[in-house]
Image (cartoon, rainbow, N blue to C red):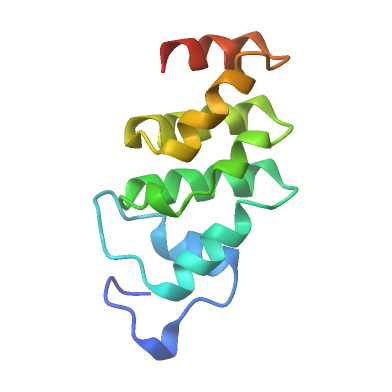
Length: 116
């Protein structure tokens, strides 16, 4: 796929989005189909899909699309990645979640929250 994807080449699934965005190293405009797939993947049971979606949304400057509910993910690595994406944005919904995360069972999550 080229950097200029047409409407006819819209991604159909997470794999298509990953293949297309893998080479993007700078902020770029995220098309609606890719955004929808990446946001949907944040609810995946596959940790790698959630982490990859967080990374890609952050890379293209669309942390605003990440719902704070991802901070409830059972995997500490996902919570840490979500904090790295969401904390700099200083959204009120994220700020409201921080006190609860200070009681998270994983010490690395509690430490990361304390630094926010």
